Amino acid sequence: MFDLSNYDVYIFDCDGVILDSNKLKSEAFRDALAGEPKDKVNDLVNYHKANGGISRYEKFKYFYEIIHPSKDKAAKCEEAIVRFGQLVFEKLQVVDYIPGVEDFLNSSQSLSKDSFVNSGGDQKELRALFSKRKISKYFKEIYGSPDTKELNLKKIINLYPNNKKYLFFGDSKSDYLAAKAFDIDFVFISGASEWETPTSSFTFSARNFTDLIHL
Image 1 (tube, rainbow, N blue to C red):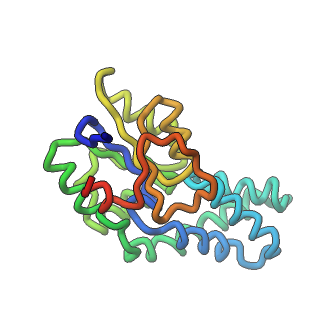
Image 2: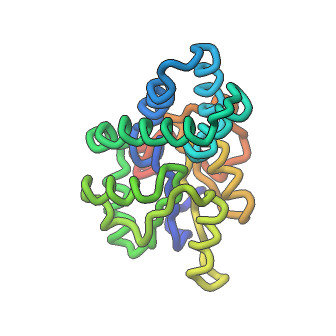
């Protein structure tokens, strides 16, 4: 039987794991690229969904280098990143939580579990957002892009001795691969995931944290 209490450190992705924000971000990619060819924008949105958890910096770079090459790629990429940030930040302040996650974080804190955020979202934006939503108190640290999830996981692991047990809660392929790179157990949170063909080799899978609380 899967036992959450066996782990010392919990690591959470944000979109689709803490906040029900995957669809919001997908639409923001469309809006940030308003005026670009619709078929190319559709290709970027499909790329985004297939590569959830990779930073917006990499995705817009991919758009202007691979999907729709531009001589002004650096300037256009920067403009799209700024637009994207403006579009999502206000909406992220009011988007719903994934069911049960607040109760789960509260109970984890009461059990003295150390919790971290490791997201593909912009780190400065995440820290400001979590402060506004008054949930920063649940986390020892909040990590995001432009650093990769693998690099951020390494930062977390380096804080502890070798005998700690880690558990990563994620909803995307990039979450899973980051956990696998460090041989960390992985819980797939499926309810709001846009990962169309998830693997079957998770440590555990649940729709949301309400399901996990009632294990």
